[in-house]
Amino acid sequence: MATSANVHGHILPISSHETLSEKLNGRWHEKALWGFMAIVLAHWGEHFAQAYQIWVLGWPPSKANGILGLWYPWLIKSEALHYGYAVVMLIGLWVLRKGFAGRSHTWWMVAFWIQVWHHFEHFLLISQATLHHNLMGKPVPFSVLQFFFPRVQLHLFYNAVVFIPMVIAMYYHMFPPKGEAPAACTCSRYKDEKEEAESHA
Image 1 (cartoon, rainbow, N blue to C red):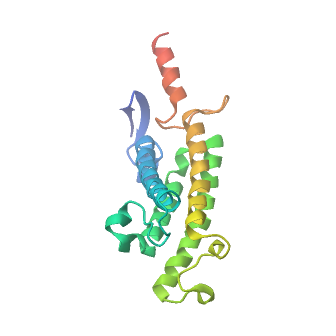
Image 2: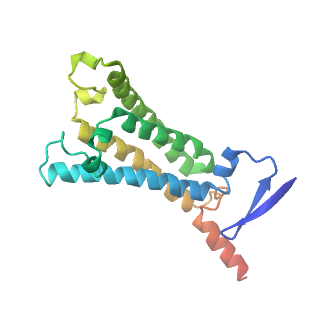
Image 3: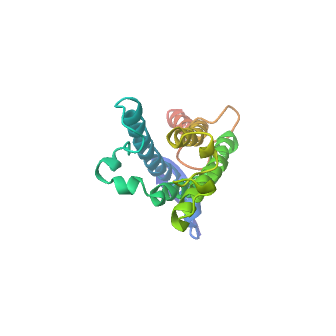
């Protein structure tokens, strides 16, 4: 038996057998995205703090550990923390993908596939740290592109090239292009405008 729920003024159909995935990509999609983006922005805050410590304060990269690293330097130097975030990003991008449609879905999946590679790089790093055997005999764990670019700049780049298509996807999700139907969740702002216009008709 199907019922409906009023979420922020939107009437959404609810199946009695609705799965967690259907909830996260339907009536819970907006809240799930807000939570996911809070994690992403907190991570960016750490990277910006680290960049500020290196290029403004003049700290050596080995001492520039961001905000958390001021109190827990061992945590920031742990590959487990960085790998854990890469996994959270990968899961979040995959789990929330079905809530997107059309152009927004395309951009969201661009972010996902870039994150697949980013995750692979972190998997290499944590594997070396765990096995105590670094690539090419390096003194510290190295990822593939780290052979060509410094780690701090490389991971700023990785996070940027994942984040930019995410932002584009969320823009098209909230404001679908003309002729494209809004997704079946509460995220679309055009849906809000349409319902408000109909209520005043």
